[in-house]
Image (cartoon, rainbow, N blue to C red; front, side, top):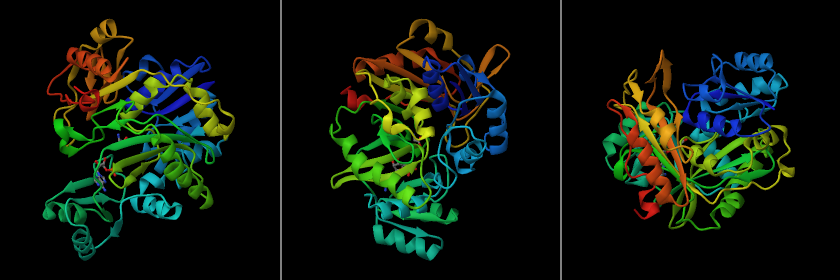
Length: 416
Ligand code: AMP
Ligand code: GLY
């Protein structure tokens, strides 16, 4: 099978790494990719938001499957263009991707499907905003309705900050605050059959101790030793399957990766958000533990044959990933700085720890930073403590001027 992956983050590097290890994958292409992905896939230049260009590239390469990584191309309809060209594609249609593209739409689907989530109001005027903030009280949760790369949400006790964020957005969702730990649970679906993956936990805030601004995600781990072993089944029954069924009922079947961001509250599981694609950095740890070759699973979702797929096989190992971000991420990340130490990780820490590139590019012999989240160091071990130690050992070998990373990824879960 020949596969083309669209995207250029650590998530796409993780996808390409797993696909490169799948014996059925005979050729692997990625567009636009990054310096790390170039080591496992052939890179191509393409505007990832241009469906015509992506499907033309897929046609020229003669691929059997296109995997669309990030949300922006999905929301722009890239999967539709590829599907119309007759090429199997892993990723939802433009309409189905609204589950991530519009928080108000996601709330509507959840209401229709009876899926538990925070009570909320959709507001478009300052008067509506004031009323909603008043109705819920502190902490205030204010979400930009549209795509904002994980940075559109403000959670604050300060009413001025909450109102300012709300009024800076065209349309906002203001909702009840959900307490309790967060879990990311991904499911692969063909629009009918839903195959849940293993749960992971992400660290969304920039700084240790969950301080600082929200980011795209600063680290993740899997499995979750503290979670109820029945969690995956419960979420499949109460969230994932009903949502997929509701999307089909509405005439906009969702196929691809359904990401449920959950809060485990004292009153039960609640959906914080849906995403329409693999999470980053959670994918890095989930795929590190998946033993079933990935290509066949994604192709089955694209072809609507998940009902006959063998149950997924998982490693008992734990996995931890630590994101190394540029100076000033998430506000105004500095780019263009050289990254060193990558060869040392490859020489001394592989195969248990490895680097997945995000915002990197090659200039001459050097690899330099080219984005906010620069790379994601992923490690496996017999438990979270070992995986964590290996990840941080590898992080310590990498140098990027002014870079930042959290030092407490998986610490609590590992009992560190
Ligand atoms: P989202 O983009 O919706 O995932 O929100 C980003 C982050 O904001 C989440 O991971 C939570 O940490 C936080 N958040 C979002 N909604 C809520 C909520 N209703 N209650 C508490 N925290 C929330
Ligand atoms: N890690 C959060 C996300 O992918 O949206």
